[in-house]
Length: 232
Image (tube, rainbow, N blue to C red; front, top):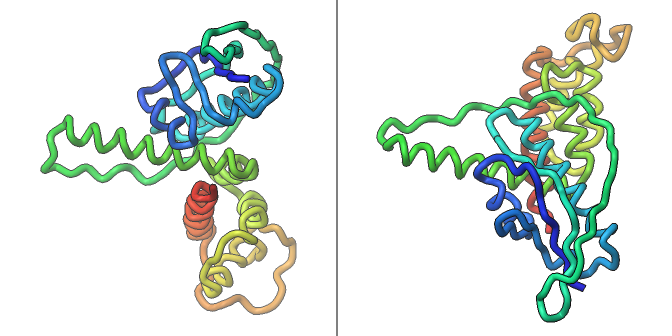
């Protein structure tokens, strides 16, 4: 069986390239992928398309510099001759969750480039970033959780939850990790936001401040997400 999905309310000029990075083809307002052909029912196709659309919208929601998004519409069914044989409308009602916005370092402007050349470089960077996030979020649903935890102004509790989700799949410098932990657990460093109420033991030399801990865990998350996006 051959399936495609019609999309609605597409936003941004990098949607087609971003979807292509995950193996999807966008032709006008129709998304297709060989993976659809392995599915048995229009409900299965709609579930996959709904999840894909949600991930893409979250990429746009969590990254203020990326305008991207769409909603999954009806599932289109095609016969062996390539002619459309049916259109299946699947209706769902879902609740909306409020998510923090993750900020990233701004693009460095090369003044030797024309405005058009710089605009194209910026556009390609947004495509690469959105594509990486899409592949990572499709590979592991905890990517969305980590991005949410580390958005805005993460607390020591948020940072430790993110670390717990990532630590089995990433390597960090042991000395840096030793410096990081007091900013999470120790009230002598983290103050009232510390995970622990009482200070215990001797602090390591030069423990991270909370702001340094935020920078450290976000760098770790960037590498972790990149690793997730590279998984086939």
